[in-house]
Image (cartoon, rainbow, N blue to C red; front, side, top):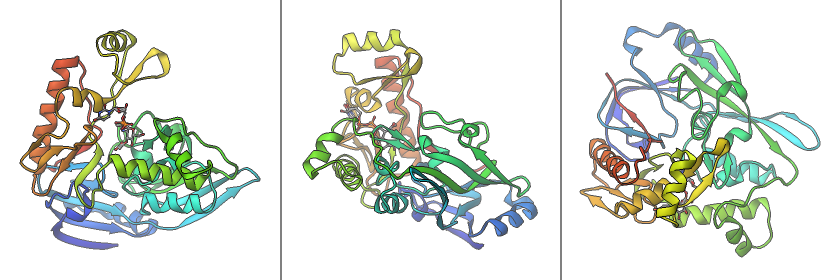
Length: 339
Ligand code: EPU
């Protein structure tokens, strides 16, 4: 366990905000974390768990303790002729894991290439891209309960996964620290390449292979999405809204080019990026806070924007989409404040 005091959060949030945190604890092992949770003091009441910080909006200094799990290790825990289950430490960089599974010919995570953040965040927000959600590969999630330091394991079902959601982001928020995630992967080709231009991009590279799927996803992401190391951002700022059939067909009639994806139960998912672009925000800039010019769902910090400026811009965008389309965009990015 390594403790730092009054240090900058800049390396710990992909928006690149230079706020300070009173205490940052890097948790290196399950045992030490359990001891810490059993003996934590009153001053550790205001606690927040951080992974790669790729989905967070800090709007001020954090007056409290931030826990940063850095558990490592990847091991095979079960396998047969077709499938394998691997257990991965929550502190491992997500894309290092995907790079490894692809190099081993283990199918399942390749569409999720280049997503920023750590393994521990993958179940929390059920990361997804190019037609795949990580929930379909997660076997179980190992955690430590913060209230008493107990090891608690959650089966896939117990995680309550939905689109960009799990209980760790909802009713159990802040109660468990993810230590390891178990993924069930396929030794035999098993893929989904129907999203957008993915198939075409793969064809440019040659045959359908796990390596070409990863490379195609990387190519598409690099064209559309800003690299957080160059322009501060947290990926999609809002979720794609899921609306009922009546509203989606009404909007589709007025706007035939609106992208609509059918969901279960007659609901439809709409492209928030399209809605935001139609309200005229794409490429908009107010000081150093802006809307990315190649993808309107991404808010960016061109350098010196504050979290509050981004927050105000996001609220203005939400209001204008609500006025024009009667749709209330929900944030995917989490705003972090201390008491
Ligand atoms: N679109 C526009 N204008 C824009 C942006 C998008 O018209 O400015 C249209 C596109 O032309 C396309 C549709 O909206 O027809 C969807 O766009 P895109 O394929 O770029 O994906 P998205 O729905 O905006 C989602 C995820 C991304 C993920 C991509 C690819 C959410 C909130 N976002 O974005 O995830 O990479 O699909 O699968 O579901 C993230 O969560 O941080 C993230 C980047």
